[in-house]
Length: 162
Length: 291
Image 1 (tube, rainbow over the protein chains, first blue to last red):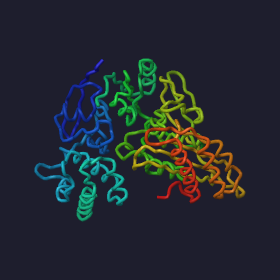
Image 2: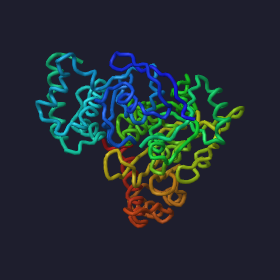
Image 3: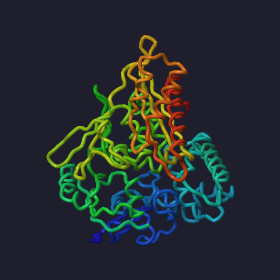
Image 4: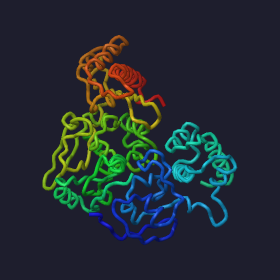
């Protein structure tokens, strides 16, 4: 009944050969079977956004996918953002603008914002507010998250990056 | 918050999916497409299907096809696909605007149009669109294909005319006739939250009077539907404020609102009345939306 199977996930460019039950969510598989605990689970039913990751570049709720659905997909988690000791510029922007307090929601926000900006850079204020309403920050740090995104976007356009 | 065990099937062909569903439907086999409604219900153990038939790896179900009859939306077309207008004209603009009301970006990137219809949540925007614009649903089971009219499709809270062994493989929305005006208005407490009331209206003006009015109401009753009593009032009349007031009041009088701890029937009726008025106001401006 519990339908365990072998599965390969590709996360941050690394291959993970794991064995799990079909009912295991992608979020739990990433944390428990692949050992990548930077992806957090909050509500576990798709409301809070803490578990947001990139699947084939799209920001998605990893608690609303089963791991078996992610076989063959390109998965990116918060662990894949920094390059060695150099934080991703959005991570640095979060620090500079005090865009986190307890930090529990931060990985989800980072992945949401990076995935969304790759689709549509330089969002309007209204579009950015609408975007981050997707995720819950119980420390209510939304204002500083917006400032961090603005700084990150300004830096990107100065450097001419897309 | 862990789903109950199930057996997972990921067929590569629609025929295989129909065969597996045919074999497992009696054992509570369910179709998994985007999973943005079913998986939360499984996490809460409100749904405990013994089998999941994942149609996500089947080629060809993600197509949007426009032909002379209308726009056909395949089973794997995701909400976000409508963010770029799917068709030219008022229908494409309407679908784009409506899609922006559905949850948030990560949900819109996964959830599907057809999944919303098959799930039939009372507050589903796509169900309102399908009901108001007379969509045609194509349902397939092993060895049989049938087309279900929107008026016959919705059957109660999260209940449809689909049988457990059927897959909703596509939905066709007919092209609006030239000159058709449409307007959509939704009231919810927070952006992305469930609608407490929403209305979609469509009509044409011919000879100074309203022709072919359709007044759809969603989020208020057990399922979205057109309100015939309201359509009768506005049909053949000039689009004037007293006519619209009577139309909106007829809507409020004709419905059986859902009631919960936060919303009384009287409150829902008032929301319905306002939603119809605002949907008409947006349609009259020539755009489905004000933004």
